Image (cartoon, rainbow, N blue to C red; front, side, top):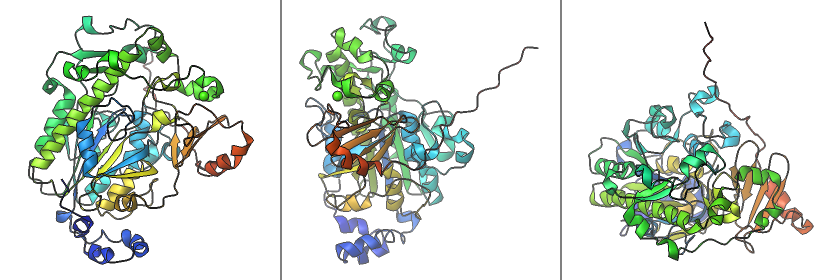
Length: 495
Ligand SMILES: [Ca+2]
């Protein structure tokens, strides 16, 4: 949709922009922070932000799986920039999303788990989230589906939003007799997995699902008149487990033709116990040993294609509506997902597959159509990026850095390795070549993606890699905020 726009069209939104565009590259960098300060609120860009839960790189724009069918994500990729190496600040929903929205990585906030709401932590009770900060600076904020950890209740952070247009997400479960056709429930490693690990085609129309309704409601809002610039977020729950989506999406991925990812039976032999513990039980082996690997992948890929169709509706509405030329689009996952790699079916780990996730941005006039950036970046950076694009005052109390220089020039030198955290004091540092992991007990992993994109060989025992490791270790956080445990409900004492 930005087809006829160019960088200067974006810059016209600010008075400083006209000056900046005429400057040499280096001077423009200096100017960058100041260039968005002069636009009145009524002329600011709108922002549409789309989250897709547990979306790994198995999408057409990232080529993580050769059979991915995601035409709408491809279409979005062609409209702007694809970050080929974007990573989650934390490989779980709540800590990852809390980090993006509060601007604080887990080691700064103390939010490491799914069952803790950051508002319950005294020092974060009044923390300004990204939508709240945008609101203070002239934006109307709207949300639907899963954006924070849950779409309703305190986890949805009602104080962040002017409008909560959809407080449900996902798809319905099929009839009881269609559930758990794999006959493995009861055998997985936790009650959560026994309930959640399932896949089945749904014999219901897509419009009857909550994710589809989220897309429809967002689409409607994109057609309406708003008296302020908007920050509209919508979050699709699929491809999060369980993989229940309409039959048509299963039919797009026949199980008997599925290509399974690269796998080594002895892959975990060189991984420290702390790494295996983060991965949890042997749930993947149960699936593989029962001949169900292809079927599980079919469920995941069908769910990804379904989420893609939801995104397509929203893009259609934006393009057909009044905001197509003045709306920034950000689309991201929240973390990655293993489907057999490293004997794992889930996320939670500090490996590439758990943390690598899509990030695409369309900033009309700033990003170039079909551009790609290979620099490693964090989803945490979205916070500072959107503040800059929304021309808010800068904020010193956030982690992450604005990606605006990369939106402008994807080839720009960018020497900022990305930090990822899984539970207290377990971290990974990823630069453009290596991944270094250090667990809280001091055990380590190191992988060279130039030679080993599957992370099969832990290089830590090889002395010649010590300088690489030492260099990456400099990026580990100096502060590890203690793990926040929420206040427990008071037990009733017997009378
Ligand atoms: Ca290995």
